[in-house]
Image (cartoon, rainbow, N blue to C red; front, side, top):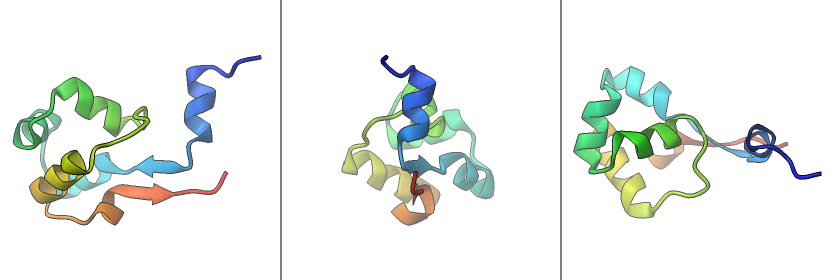
Length: 79
């Protein structure tokens, strides 16, 4: 049986804590998307841990916009 999208999501050991940093920096999704140069839809995919990958250039732009380190955004959780 093939796992559903939700089941696959829970198997991913990398968690994106973008919403936490956005709250700390008091920045909206729309504002961050504009600063980073990505669509609000793509930012939402990242925020909701549905992304399968992220470009280093996008990660760099997010870190620059939020004044943070990649480790502030990405967390490894063993299954």
